[in-house]
Image 1 (cartoon, one colour):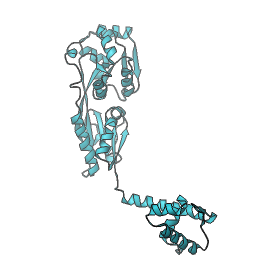
Image 2 (cartoon, rainbow, N blue to C red):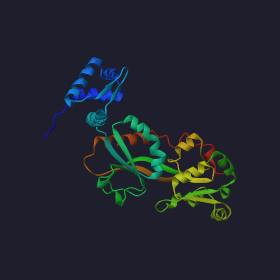
Image 3 (spheres, rainbow, N blue to C red):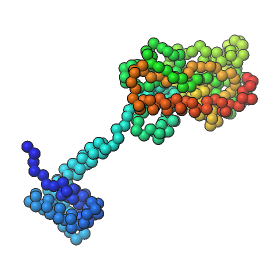
Image 4 (cartoon, helix red, strand yellow):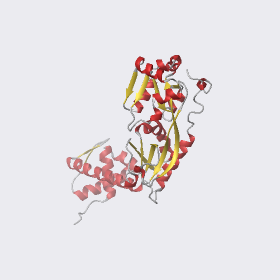
Amino acid sequence: MSQRLPSLISLRAFESSARLRSFKKAADELAVTAAAISHRIRDLEEFLERPLFIRKVRAVELTPEAERLYLAVHHGFETMAQAIDHIRRPQRANVTLSATPAFAAKWLVPRLAAFQAQHPDIDLHVHASNAPVDLEAGNVDLAIRYGLYPSAADGNASATLLLQDQFAPVARPAMAHEAKQGFAHWPLIHFDWQERQPKGLTWNAWAQAAGYPLSALSQRAADSSEIRYSEETHAIQAAVAGQGVALLSVVLVEEELRLGLLKVVAPPMLEAFSYRLLKSGRSQHSEPVEKVERWLVTQAREAKGIKGIVDTEEMSSAP
């Protein structure tokens, strides 16, 4: 059975007066007169049959009963305000995008502020993992794959080409200059591929493509230092820190090349895999998913890539 309650208007006047400890300030907050506030407080006191305020010249104080009532009323108004705000606020859509940790950190995350500015109604959740996700399971809406397509894990997913990758030997500018003395003297940086390393993207493959004889590779391995990291992003940081020369994805170090933090040491660049945007074969996709897809395609098309970053004349001959 519902209990009889005082008017909401009187409770609102009481909450404001108790919080501000002033009838006048409460009147200003609620855009009414001080006399109206006093009248509403008096109605509430008559309803409760006891005083709620100790009236002083320039302020008011709460009685013990009023303190208890204030806590309940204030909490009640806060709860109502939150519920009303939730109802009035436009519902935000959630889209989950899966990508490798390196691609997410180096290419995707720097662009997310622009996405949020363009699509403030979409919460884009980035799922960073090297393991392929099952798009048909429904937990992930879109996935960016690196490597050969299609694979058994992709099922009936459709794919859109985003970026074609290349690998190049890069180092910080000072070390790139020192590297002119030859491949045999380069301190090499390696990183562990999460899956089996492609044969065409190894230091041996690059050296052979650059025209170095096998004897030079054997001598290099015996005479020069090498550093190995378990994560590709760590290898990028190591190259920026000047620890050596790393054979890295041009897509992932595009910003470092553009800012002059890294420099391509010597040709050639090795053709690598492509980044593709995958979407499940489900016939229906929400508008937010379509917006994320279009944004990713646009970002990829606007990426300038290696052109305009590398000095082609300087790259025309190997050291």
